[in-house]
Image 1 (cartoon, rainbow, N blue to C red):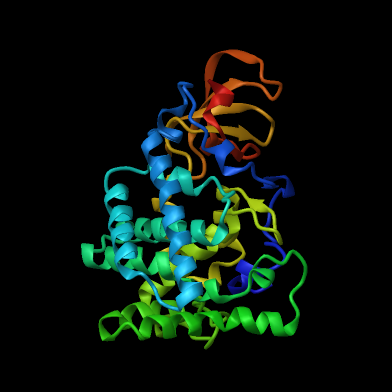
Image 2: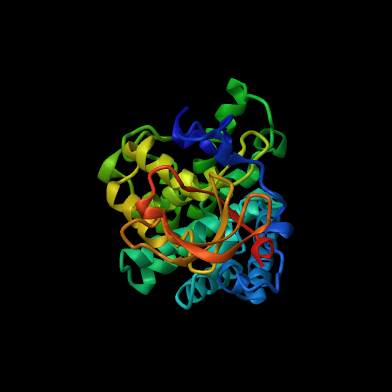
Length: 338
């Protein structure tokens, strides 16, 4: 399977324990507001969850306009892009929302998620504000051509036929034309939309560009798009937990993306910030107490509960960077360890 087709492929084939490829809970359950002590950073502010939900609704409205009229309500998108940047500059709460991976409306959630992830990568690359704005707006609108694809194709659980694949592969050009019609000041955005499915090794589409021939912002947004597709439950593939998705990108699909961008994605995503509740592959449940900068997928935990849910006495520290057989398989709602 080509990684560029992941958004509509039958399923990611990532290395590692298949147990980490899971059916996710509905987002309303994963983002529930808990009074548990571990909730302070995993979903710290109910305002963040409210904003994230509202942003998805806003993008669903944008999609409806695109379908009905073939135009983009750009002012609404610009305001939303500015909000993404301001929220990420003050904290990482939005990242926790993105990691839930079970949206009610995939296209709307994907637009918001890709904007969030792209800006996060841009922050890691020390981009100035104008570039962050382009990443945010480009992330929100990266797949507007997909809004024109019939839902019966986009949501089809079975294999696509040749005609359906051709329809999917035509969406970057359809999106580019919509933006190009907005005038010369948005040609940079049209370029992003046309190229975000291209890949560093030439395996992408529609033009099979490679390396430096691909716009840098399009490369960032393409990486964010694939990561979001991996961690999101779809009718045609199960969800991959975030740390395993990153591992798959770094190991199996590393040729598809510029190495510097992959490294920045890993460095910037606080997948397991302090206070995050997690389940280990041995069944134990713990809470992140410290992040290991050199090993972002292996934080220090306070192990609080066994697989049966019984307490283990006083919380015991466990540094996963020193463990060779133990790893995180799931991020949990904080209420499970409260």
